[in-house]
Image (cartoon, rainbow, N blue to C red):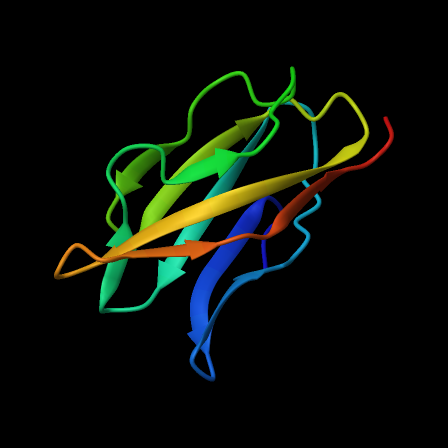
Length: 106
């Protein structure tokens, strides 16, 4: 799997983000989230939300297309950051997944 890429999928009925935690590589890392499911899509606004972004996540995430979302991580300070991935199904019901981003020491 390429660096800075997270696969969002259902495994055994459970939603997962892999890897978890994701450990971004490089400063100003664009983390790309790839949804591997035909019944859901990323929500249109704020598909990935960092709980306490501090200075490391200066921009809101964005949906590139229904199956791809992107999030900028400045990745200049060490720390663990809980985040939430939001998906919706065809009826508009929301799915919430709560993994972690781990910035390593620079």
